[in-house]
Length: 424
Image (cartoon, rainbow, N blue to C red; front, side, top):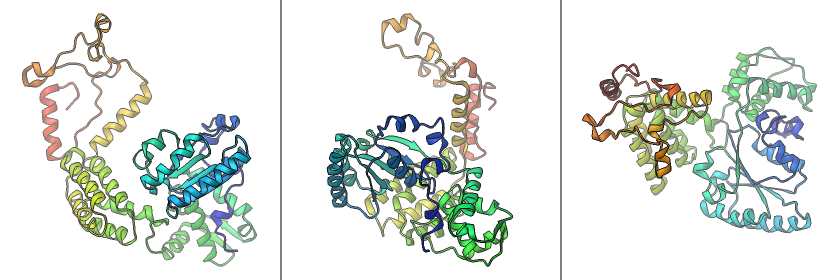
């Protein structure tokens, strides 16, 4: 049998689906929709192997809708229109049950391809389900995104991955008849990275390349998987390993590693906008205020890549990767927003101090909105010692300048203004 294990183990019902309890568990966000039978158009956003395609198919089964599937890699506007004509015809036959159109990797559709879906989505002749590994805010046009609900799928956790292994050994038509014992599963879980497909593919590789009786341990898994790793493929499992190596080389200030992994991606056919976008994120997350020009450089590179295309785009990509790798590093801004968001989750919606509130009307002024506010530019050094946090958070420090030349200057500046208030 040539069918891969991951395909053989694809769930046949929502009850068999492992993971994403926040969507399809007892209190899941999709449950009320499934009970109503009125499924909205949606975008399923999550990393590979989290069940986007499977979930789309099972939703169609659950609410008894015709199901059509397209891949954004292989489909153009003509294929989309052909499907829409079929879907509209079949939707008429099924009265109010509009067919589901599932588009895998919808982020790879051009604007014109996405535009071609708008009319059918607006009329309700289809229910669109798009799957993407990329942030839909950047990759899906606003007109289409505004007509879709966005649901986030999470990487599978340790217990869910272990359940998948057990299910495969107990239920798979081939594996259940083999003599297999799992002595250690840490390597399988680590290699998977929360990706069910990668987990099952690794398990199958180990089983198929080893004689029975088979006792699987971490050393065996690492040996078999590393030995059989193929060349970089933008559609394969190594896609995320290579971009990870690229980002970590830049974060580690190694321009040689960065350029090597960049070359691997370019030669492997990676989307150059994907590479540029990752450097744009890194410029803030890993360099930040240690070198604010890094963000400017990354943004300019992103724009250049969009204008140039390959092969010329490889040059600004290389220039930017080397510049970012050679910059001082700081994740202080990244950590600051993480702390602030965590504090918001802990404390809820604390009231805005009256002095900071907007007062566009006379009534608001009567309620003291903005009454005590003092305009910083009216004071010496353009600074006034006011409270800008809610009362319950007075003096709380979210931002901790890192040890580098520019942020040391920033720390000195903040200390001169706020004295000992924030402990700078």
